[in-house]
Amino acid sequence: MEKIIVKKFGGTSLSSFEARKKAVDLIKSSVESDFKVVAVVSAMGRKGDIFSTDTLIDNLKKELPNASDTEKALLTSTGEFYSCLSVASMLRDNKLKVEIFSGADVPIITENKTFNAKIKSVGTENILKAFENNDVVVVAGFQGITEFGIVSTLGRGGSDTTATALGVALKADCVEIYTDVDGVMTADPKIYSETKKIDELNFVEMGEMASEGAKVLHTPSVEIAERYDVDILVKNTFSNDKGTKVSKSAKNTEIVTGFIHRKDITDFFVDYTLVNNSPKRQRGLFKSLAEKHISLDLINICGKKVYFAVNSSDTEAVRQHLIDTGMRFFERDNVAKISCIGAGMRGTAGVMAKVVNQLRKADIKIYRSVDSLINISCIIDEDRLQDAMKILHELV
Image (tube, rainbow, N blue to C red):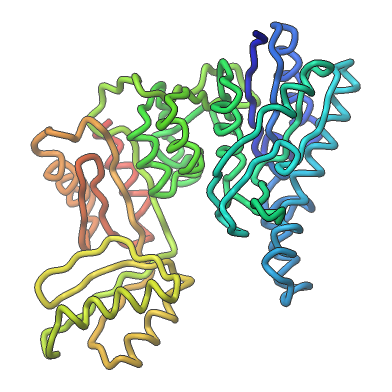
């Protein structure tokens, strides 16, 4: 049986001719090591680059505001097609035999949903047949097709999930995710420049970091890898660093593994002290916001008082709902959420005390917090985020 390796290249790994040449060299190296390569590609670059997903979405809003969801999915998936053509052309220039596949060509079958669709099945026959006469199959990431033949998309970062699902289906030797940093870091380097690389992470930690907003891996890709016990290697396209291994057996000696932040949130406090039937009114609030597709985070319920946070884009809708229903409420803007994550927290006493003491040492006010077995999250002032990252890194 032939050896298969899946390599996924993100937008920054394809944003220029020089970057794409690095990607092509990595693919060629695996072919020369007798691997058949599935190269999963994202749209090129970031916001402002002509074929990036963000740019395509902006164009939709400005020029095609009345497009249907199906039409929007078609347009936002075109960036990956251009990447496929460009990478395939460069691979052929390097004397490699290549075939291009869309998500529908694979096929990657998803639930009947246009955006943020979950994968239901992945075909292997077409790719395996293509490998009979080709060294590389370049697959457009981020996209699939419903059972009714309608184009669907997997959500932002969905190319990671494409790669992991293909790795599982094809029983690949390895799934490698290429980006522009040396691996999974203890924090976002854009917020804290002295962040450290994490050599190994288990699926639980990586899944928690991804769900809290770490952009290095798409959350469903980690869930798939954990379910089928497929290791993921996160590497830098532009360096020879060994990267971060994400696996079931990974061991990390640190109690706190990393720090994830989320900005652009609003914190709400709703006071039911003066209303009748408080539990029913609380349930009605949660149900109403869910019906408006507003996701709540950092939920605390303390008797007749309810606290929760939302994305800033949902602030006006929440505020208006509370006004319309006659609720007493308070909102706090310009705040950020910082999450301290680590499997080593489980069963370890005093971690919360250390986090609180570190933030207080830097005179950083904690408005409130929530915690789980491997996650302590605090709401702080957004303008103190860098200070918080710096002082908390003393714990790792």
